[in-house]
Image (cartoon, rainbow, N blue to C red; front, side, top):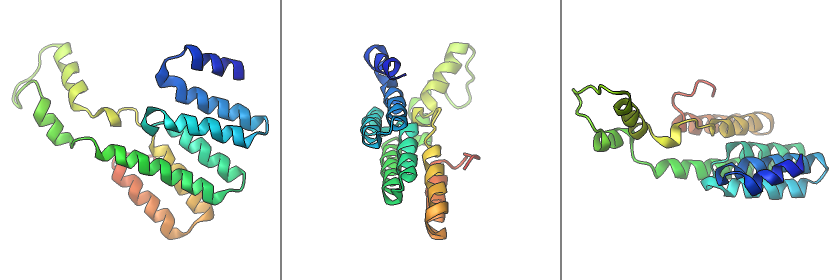
Amino acid sequence: AEKCYRNALQHGPEVSHGFAYTALAYVAYDDGSPDRCRGYLRRAVSLNNGRQANAWVSWAQMEEAEGNIDAARTVCMAGIAKYERGLLKHPAIKTKKAQISPLGPNQESSTASEIRHRLMTQVPVYRSGDRFFNVYRNWARLEERHGTTESVEEVYRRAFLAFPTQWKL
């Protein structure tokens, strides 16, 4: 398995390297090397502006499994902080729609390409397929097991601010 993941790093697109490093971390942990596992996960979360949700979750769960509850909490907080900073960099949806809509408010597009263009330019990319709610869920689970009621409430408060329509929270 390790050889395959290393091949993925060598030959795969750069955007997929975070997944390969996360997979290598699983292999390292399975081999009994939590330090190597941490190293791979650090690499994974350093890619794609830290947008590797599965790596953040895996890292926190590994630290929890090793009995490092404070380290697991720190990993969750670091991942969420990086994610939330990234959300704040994007313009508001209403502003973005008003600025780039190719058609007026009362006009309808007649072709599939026009509809596709409007969807691609008006839907914020950072929300499309966003799985970062899993990091919030993992942190909430961690706090439910090892934290306080107040800490759980704070995680969910932050999660609902970032994902107001995510029913899985």
